[in-house]
Image 1 (cartoon, rainbow, N blue to C red):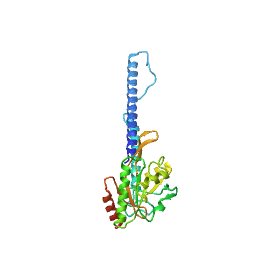
Image 2: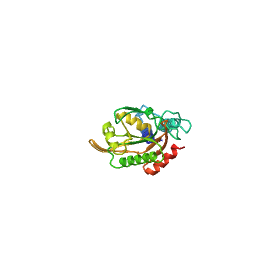
Image 3: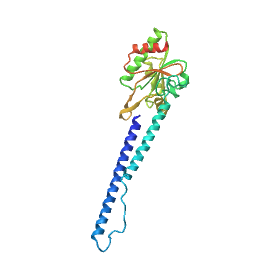
Image 4: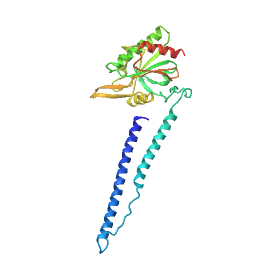
Length: 265
């Protein structure tokens, strides 16, 4: 269950508890009012002081509405959970539509971005090659450059030693600052074969969502800021299906060895 769903359930539960408390309070007030009326009627021989009578509500009514609210929330969360399970595509069940067929939720999907030469690029343009995909940004002070150096060393090893050609693709998560010309100048410092992709903020966010990439601006000071992200690399087969993911713990040697194993399967 996602953090959003847990948060929603927690807020609804608190609201239900507050409603339950309010209902019990009203019941107690009604009970005291009725007791006062009876006492006044007994002490006043000339007749009742209050002519309107109220019967205290049964105790179960104070729990009925909160229980119904919680039941409705539980049903909604169960529906979400079952819907998430339906969206999970297991090995052998996926189609060659740019989505992963590995066990677990679908990762990947269609996109439409701009490369460092200003040309439109979609997922279909990358089909036919093995792709090593990385999401980052050119203003990254340390992790980004280290990961790109690792990527460049790995594809060099695969090409020179194993004669395996891997197409490296860098997708920016900072499109406001990473223009096509900025990407071109930056990526040349690591390897001229790396394709840089940028585009409108909405398109970048959509692709990041499809590939389960987390990113968020931090330490903002006007146009100066950092971007936190998940820093994962994706190895994609010629059908644009993700077959492996690689984290920060991999060295360039380990990365090239594992990619070699996957390509030779």
